[in-house]
Image 1 (cartoon, rainbow, N blue to C red):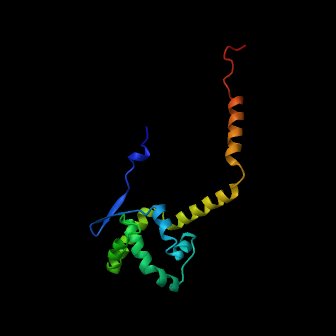
Image 2: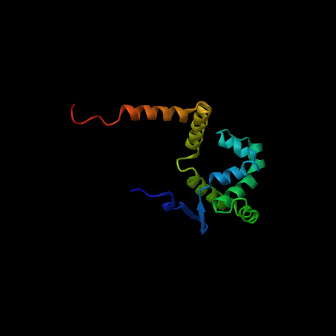
Image 3: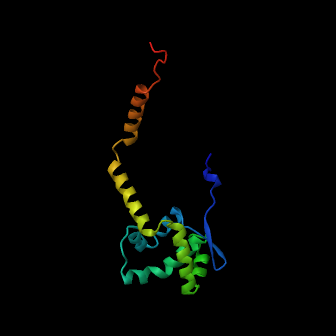
Length: 149
């Protein structure tokens, strides 16, 4: 028998003596309004150097705080902002590996496929159609009289 959701433990890495985790959808969603440029990255678009310079300092601090379990906590973001650039990079690499376990590019492609599937099926009543098929199959596949008569 497999594990249940409650048996799963968050994967972590240690950076500078601190436990680091992947960033959740909730944390990412809370950052998107603050950093619209991150929305471009999530769509697989490249940022211009000007966009990077505008968003990087605050976004890096917010990502590090979120990856350490303090999403949206200003004090944690201030601490992250004060770290040396190499230490910040160490945190970002670990957080990125834990957040996008198959890599960022494949993640974006999976998001695109999900978006296409949702757009293609929105309003088509797919669930209803599946239920009808399932009912028809269950009638046709009902147990036959095994007596041979």
